[in-house]
Image (tube, each protein chain N blue to C red):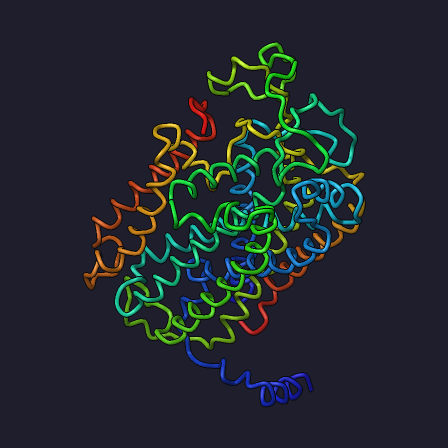
Length: 140
Length: 337
């Protein structure tokens, strides 16, 4: 009877800890205003980048490319309809034409990703191992 | 039969040396946060080794190699997710571990040296987090590096090895890659070894409200507990990686400043918004304060309720950090580098 009660308490404790951890990590990304329910990274996305000014001749430039063109004819950021375009940027920069930059964001993983079933299997297995260890407590 | 096999293995591998007594409270979440951090670090190392098979540390191809990994390599997206979420979990468990050590005054005599080693480990972990952020070489990475180079530039001769001028013609990204996969992990492992040695030498700190606790368990039982905790950490990381993809942008647009740093660094982004030189001033002050903790609080009291000044200081620092993180997440940048 005592061992049943202890096991029950342990089960509830393990469950509560699991839920609390999930809630803590969920709040990390749910608090972000830029979590989007996209189809996932695997799907092709139309690039919203306008041609960037060519980089200077430095080690970060791809070979063969010439120097920058800061006065290049680029669409005005303020006229952009791109909802992902950064709305909060410094005043001095707004005076120049700026390329659109697609902001990286957390996205839901698409089930069409390569190896999604295998990944789900690994996750379930990991959860099962944790569950078994939590119930049986070998050597603890 | 199984028991006999276990006995044979124990005799031959010296596992009996691990059957020494540790306090019973070792097997609690509070006193296993360090072990959980270690588990997350182990997952990072293993997933990092696998990621290194696909990453190209050249500025022209780094971002591309990651997109290839995610889009074309079987389970590549999952591997990257595991690496990213392990770092997130490590950030949380490490923070909670520091809080626990502080609240239970486990930095007090004779454990001051272990606290200092822990501060060193914290600095290394921050360095790993930063270099890992830069390696993906998207807009966020580029802007992080720009801020870093600005700080390094202000440090004069001390900052020279951290800049491009130190090795002309060698991309800084390649050097940061070396630091991320080699230099910093090696230092981390050395410090970790020292950290674990000190825990063994000084023994686990006693419960603050019951320093003379008599109940003990074997260390192998504590290892079993940590094994279960590590399995839980791995399961959580897999679940997060299965559901949520880490962010990855395209090649950076040089000269732009439009992104925010990850939440672990966004507090300093907020400070930078107040006064840009805070980027240089605040990190050394924070590290100095952390180093000074065991030397400022030298009383013998361990119980948190009887250490009001220490608890008030912790509360103030926590509120400030959370406030800066939230403000940095939602504020508008009013300056540029």
